[in-house]
Image (tube, rainbow, N blue to C red; front, side):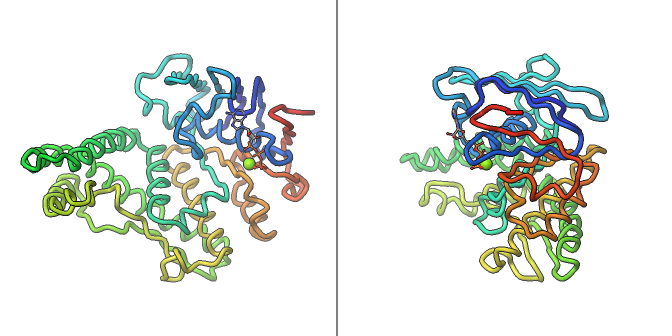
Length: 361
Ligand SMILES: Nc1ncnc2c1ncn2[C@@H]1O[C@H](COP(=O)(O)OP(=O)(O)OP(=O)(O)O)[C@@H](O)[C@H]1O
Ligand SMILES: [Mg+2]
């Protein structure tokens, strides 16, 4: 999948700008705070319908304006596709090839991208939240079933948590099993997909990691929760766990078991990476996870996704930068940096200079 053109109107610090991308390496160059990440974010938004940086879409609208619009023209193995998003204060409209999509999950996966920025180091370093976020976004890009189940799950979870704060305990204990039935069903979809995804991701990440470290260290990923394989069995197990936790959930006022609490394990040389890996090891592990994500998308869709590398080159040492670029031949890259010379290495590049939300020649 290759993005050919991206037009931004009142998006972040862009008023009206059109980017034309080449099929290979595209380098967005500019000083700090000029709009490089904003452009990368726009591409990612059109892939996923979500931003990596914010909670509320309205933050994407250029200050003082009431509506932002983004449009991408892309080309994949099934032909050309146009993706549009119009973001207003009170909602948004998404269009694929000019037709409005009713459900936001139908917007997903028309164009896929892997986003890597220093922020992704949190996948390795931080608490389970970051890893769940990674899994949710990544698995959603490969499965609309997952994305739809995730939305439902989150809605039911919120309602269940509201119920847990209710004072009428008779009502609480009577109603919980009703919520649990639905919650467990959607949870089972999430868990089965995550397990399957990690089963495929793990060897790819190990391989990428071996490539980056010349085989000195081994990386392993896994699902840090114990569930059976079939969705029916997962749901049954979860219902038992949910009801066993009623007293605790009521006391704490939130749901303490389920996929919103599960974690993904990342270990280097057999040791849990979190709280142990050095800065360099963290960077390499995070990069390996992202390269594995790229391979999974490639396997599933038969073509490589767009690789967005925001500000990562300066974080990597020279041999790793070279390895990364070698690894991504044939992949369309959008790379941001403040000094282009350092990343080029004679590669054919399409350099786009950005200043104050404008492309300058
Ligand atoms: N909704 C918005 N309306 C107007 N300007 C915005 C909006 N959101 C962000 N900006 C501006 O965009 C600029 C940041 O752009 P961006 O994050 O793309 O910078 P960058 O070029 O990636 O810089 P760096 O090299 O520091 O990462 C900031 O000046 C910020 O104030
Ligand atoms: Mg930036």
